[in-house]
Image (cartoon, rainbow, N blue to C red):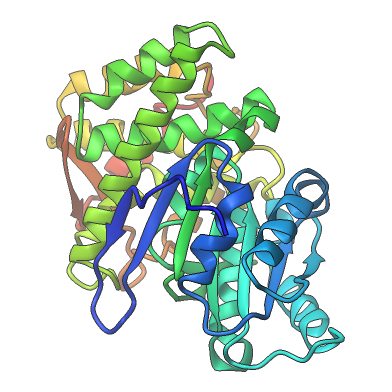
Length: 376
């Protein structure tokens, strides 16, 4: 067996045996079998993915697993898109797992191969099937690489809102192959950049000029690839640091990762998850949070201006289309996971690099802040 050419890039140190490593590099899917073999409790594995991703990367992953000593891994798929991130999809996947020729046991390893929807859904299946299976995150989109693949949040959307049904279930490893980004549409890359902008606002402002530089760089150049790899690494570091301090979101610290998500999630839900990519909605939500923070006397104007400039350089949306009802958005805010006693709570910036979770923001200020970002 050839020596693994990539070492762990990060280590998420959690109690109770839930710790795991992140592997980040280019063209490492062909060696991921060795990584997975080190954390697997059996040689049976099942890959959960989506049809297009299966065509692109399924064979590479299957062959890598077999070369590392796994039995021929089964591969099951579900339809792509946020609108399929539902309990029905989870039930269908459980049916497929149950009817596989090789019967699963509690030591079987699941491989979540794909973007954020795949990671969230497959991770939730792993959390509940046979009352818990090990799984490995293999994100293939920029957004999943820097956000959803790290931290163990799994789940599906509900008719009342995004990610309202789920469980904390940490992966056994995360394998990030930046080479998969070359197959993504440009819109998917831009959507992932919104989450990187978020990390710049909540923890590391030095990321923001790097994002702006990347937004202006010529596509497909070695410079662009190098900058993107650096941004992925730093974003994962920030996410891991927060998760290690507040794994189950009990102290309020982990909530800072939801900067821009309160309005963003409402915007996704009110458009039935068809109009905006998650990152696009988060970008708009960050501008909304900045306006709300300004009007509440918390957020300096330069924060909003810097976020707006960075979104514009990345060609990301920053306004709400005028045909979307503000009343629908405001109602959905009260159903956000961070809400308490029917009142929305918001992550707001005190300056670039420092945010906190606030409650008690008046409904008038929230309305005024959201209204400020509507198309004129």
